[in-house]
Length: 113
Image (cartoon, rainbow, N blue to C red):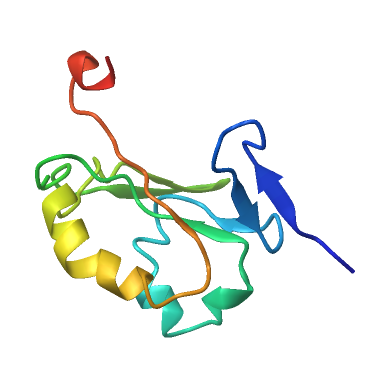
């Protein structure tokens, strides 16, 4: 069965996925930790955790709370920053067959302009 899908087909360079299953941004991190535990190559794509231009420490503790319906978190976009991502993480991604969607987050309204 062919489960492949093309995202943004009207763009010059669409994104072809082997299947529509993507690891969502956030607790999946940059995929490195999960790659040790499961075959991430079976995913259609990985969406990395939100990364800002500069390193960000995130919110102070506590960041998570258990509720009757599950858990809530407010990590506060803790991340290494774009330069560290390019230097330290992107070379690992380049060895993977699965596409990685980089989630770049702004820190101000102007960052999104």
